[in-house]
Length: 366
Image 1 (cartoon, one colour):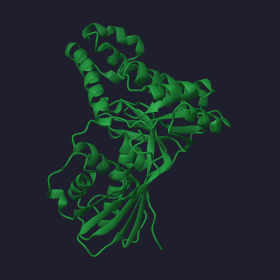
Image 2 (cartoon, rainbow, N blue to C red; image 1 turned 30 degrees about the horizontal axis):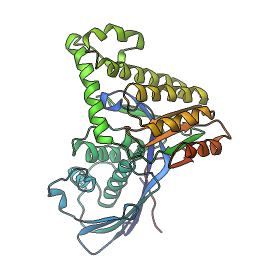
Image 3 (cartoon, rainbow, N blue to C red; image 1 turned 30 degrees about the vertical axis):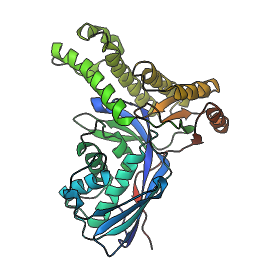
Image 4 (cartoon, helix red, strand yellow; image 1 turned 180 degrees about the horizontal axis):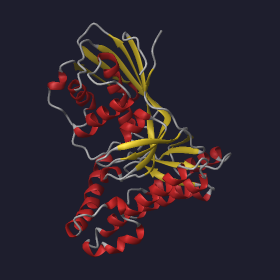
């Protein structure tokens, strides 16, 4: 990581789009995600107080946090304090105050990880300012951000958001017990991000869907102790359906199908020149499972995707946990503006092109 002037610090962290593997990381299955050029920017100036004075003008919010507040009761989704708890376990001990301003260009509560990018930027700031007993790099930032956002709050998410925001580019992430990731690309032409304007319902949707999918898998494990979900192909699903109650069977099939689609996408990304039309078609196939089986879309999202596909998009899918939020559309070259106008007519709040981005970084002041 770069050297910074600790009197005045700027950290940026990108949002992310899950291209393949929504509702897969909590099953230990792989995902493909990319960081995008919509970012959280954290600017900090050292003050003479023993507090972090934090301003979030985008949401008209502010707060003051004592350097010792990590010892207090942890309130739900208070990621500032949970991050302080986590970094202290890694030898990062704040010893002076800062006045911090956090702004962003990532749509809020729209499925593109504005909250994870905020946590990544906050953890990055704390580590770069106060040090650590571990080598500070993008992987450490990602892991600590995950612990702060998910582990400390016992939330149902996986590691995709924090690692994508911290590492950047297009990542294939194996989310199981032998967690690992690799960069599989640095650009993806024709991406459009479109916000429905309907706030997503992350915790409710993730918890409900996760429980149903895990229940369906557990029914199989009870009958087949050596069962490994990651090894199942679509043709194999019929071998296991007799073990699963009918109401849970669609969730089992969805898990298998989404995993197979992600593997096909990985093969395409692994080519020296990948086919955008094939990537788009696989995105649409993935969306159909999320819509028709997991039922995480809403009518406005459906209308937006239908309009984009009728206008000639290569593919489109909902992004994130569902219940609202955003979609990503893959556009043929030269049709981006036309597709953006079509999405707005279909009820979208916003629609604009996005590019693949690098991960979190510090911007030293001279």
